[in-house]
Image (cartoon, rainbow, N blue to C red):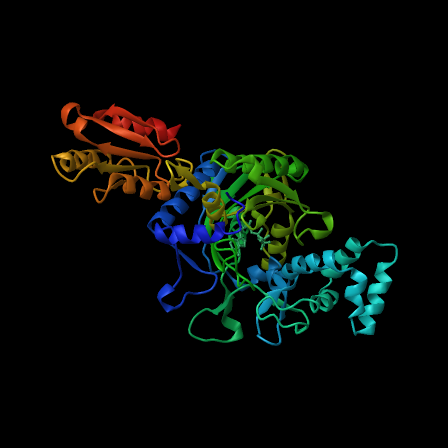
Length: 492
Ligand code: ATP
C-alpha cells in the first residue's frame, strides 16, 4: 500500500478530513512550507514528543532544557551556520522557479541512464568546462564521472541545462548556481539595521551547547551525560515538498550526549541502536527503516562520523533522524567566539577537558509523517473499502470512542455515564450521530484503538461491546471494568 504513488495525496486528504493537518493560512491560499496541526494532529504530535521525552529524560544521565529560539548572532558565526548553512540554488530564467542543484541531480541521473554522458557533453558549448570534464574523466566510468560533476556546482549546472525546467518545461534556461543561506533573518528591537540582525534558530542544538556548563553545574552531572530539548526550528528551504517532509518551520527533538573523547565510538554506536529501536518500539516495521552511514567525503564540517536513520516514504527513502559524532567542534568554537571556557572539570583526575558530543537529532514533524505513512492502510471488508490508521496505541490521538447504538431507550444516558467515568483518565470521544457502521469507519480513519458500544444488552446486564480497531473483533465486558481494561491494553 505504502509505495503507491498516490499515497501522499491520500495522506493529505485524510489529514484534512479527520483534522490531522491543515494548510497554513488556507483561506488566503496557503503559505508554502508551513502546516497547521489540527485537533488530531496536535494529539499525535504531542504523543510522539512525549514518548521521545520520556525515553530520554526518565533516566538519570539525561537532563532536559528549553532554550530560546532567538540567540546571540555570534552563536551562528561560531556554529558555522553563517558561512556554511547554504544550499546551491539555480533559477529558471523563463519562469523564475528556484531549485536546489543537488535535488535536480536525481533527475539528471535518470536522463544519463537513457543518454550517455558523452552525448550529454557533446551539447556543451563552453570549451573551458568541456576541457575540465575531459581532464577529470581519465580512467573513470560513466557513473564516476557523473558523480564528480554533480558534486561540483559549476559543472553540474551545465549538465542541468540538459534538463527541461520541472516547473515550466523550458530547456536550457538555468542561471549559474549561487549559494543561498537557509537561515531566516530578522531584527531585534525597533531599528532595522545590520547591527540588530538576528536569526531564527535553524536547529535546537546550539541552545544546548551554549548551556552545557549551566546544566552541568546546576545538576552536578558527570560525564557521560546528555541534554535533551524539543523545539521549533526554521529553515528557509529552497524547495519544500512531500507534505511534512521538508517544511520551513518544523520541530526537532535533539539530545546531545557529552562523553569523554576516548569513549566517542562506543556511545555513537550505542545511540544508533537506541534510536532505531525507539521507532521500532512505536510500531515501525524494520523493513521500512534503515541506517545510512555518511561516506567520509560527504561529512558535515563538524562531524567525525555520521549516520542517518531513514524511513521508506512513499516517495522513497528519506532521513528522519541524524546521529553525529560532533567531536569537540562546537564547544571549542563557542569557547573561541565567546572567550569563555566551556571545559569540564573532572573531580577524580582533577583535569579539565572539552568533551566530545554524540548528537541524536530527530525531526518531530518528519517522524509524524513517517508514523502516519506507516499507519495508513486500506482493506476490503465485506465488499466495502475500509481506511484505517494502524497507529501504535501510545501514539493514537484518541484511545477509545463511546457509541450508544441508538440515540434513545436510555442508551445515551448510560454512554454518558461511561464517558464521565473515563473522560479524565483517557483521551476519549463521544459520538451518537448516524449509523454505528459509519461511526466505526470514522474512528478507524482517526486510528482510535477501541470503540465501546452501548446496546440493548447493556440495558439488561450492564455489559458493553469493545471493538478492536485492527482485527475488528468484538468482545463483551462489564462496563464497570472498562477503565482497568483500557489501562491494561494501552500500557501493553
Ligand atoms: P535534509 O538533508 O533532509 O535537509 P538535514 O541533514 O539538513 O536534512 P539535520 O540538520 O540533520 O537535517 O536535522 C535533523 C532532523 O531535523 C532531520 O533528520 C529531520 O528529521 C529534521 N529536519 C531537518 N530539516 C527539516 C525540514 N526542512 N523540515 C522538516 N524536518 C526537517
